Length: 465
Image 1 (cartoon, rainbow, N blue to C red):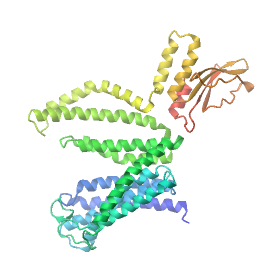
Image 2 (tube, helix red, strand yellow):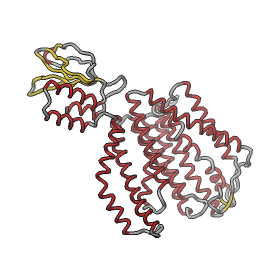
Image 3 (cartoon, rainbow, N blue to C red):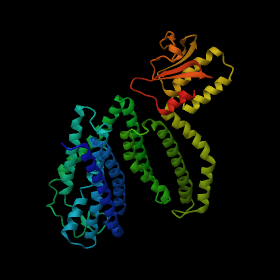
Image 4 (cartoon, rainbow, N blue to C red):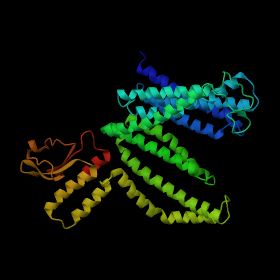
């Protein structure tokens, strides 16, 4: 049986080799990008996928060689690297090369790319984050995905390609397939496509079901993955809707969406700062909304008004200055509204930690009755941390008594003895003693729902309160 160390090394070599292969393909094909049959933009996109998925797969394989997710990432990266390099054959054929080597590479380029695009919306969703299907019943979905992929690749490999000198042709004029081709396998490819569409839908259902069943660390891992998936889709959709007149810098932002998924998956699987996901989502929503606002203003003023006054695609300095002024004036009000929206999306009805402390400070400064302060403290603590129960304890003599709880109908606990003045076991997720000048005054305790745990931000909030 292959050792974990050998597997890890093999994965690292495969990942780094994929990166090198993609880099070589870019260098070799770059001089031919001006040719109609050589898709420079397509190659750049494939290389970007290879440069992000392959290294992450190598890292995960080295650190977690038994986790199939690492090998799925490596398969995606290798598939795209081979496609990027195989485009060199297409470039050679387009330039007049009639060697078998060029024909073989061109033939590979027609089908080798498919695993990289199929595995992202299927196997990743089916296996993340544990590397196993949701249950034994869901293993059929993995098999169906591989079957559909095999059928599609078979049909693509033996399909007769359209030749020509324009971008509409599949392969350049002069290409000679190294294998017999025709239309005999076209029905197989069509059936494989249907199978993959159904598998994609089932994969989405699978990860939703996994999220609903998940608790604790697995739920946080799925949050990272879901946030990255939404960000990727949003950025790619954003890029596809941008007009060609937009500055290159703004359109290039869409490429940020490609590495989001592998990086987030690596963070989740390695469990590094896993419980900071709420902060990440919050900031992502705010910055994403601001980017959409700036783009909308630019498109409406520069493109829309420019077209209305007959400027067309010609840049207009006055309209650009006007768009910048509008963004500068409206930026702060829009940011505040987006921040409130992000807080509601991430924290729901409960307040952010900052709002909890602000609310408590303002209420402490108000003219509330003393008997009302402790119940308010318990409620604010529970709502700010999402705890199922929060209790404020006071030291009375040699005992610790529960003076206030939230919700109010929580079980009324009896007094607890203080052994040697130390805090007893309060049977809570977190219990914090409250001291004044070295003397124990009481404690705060909170209990999360089964399977959930405190995030670092929530634990800090309780400590600050």
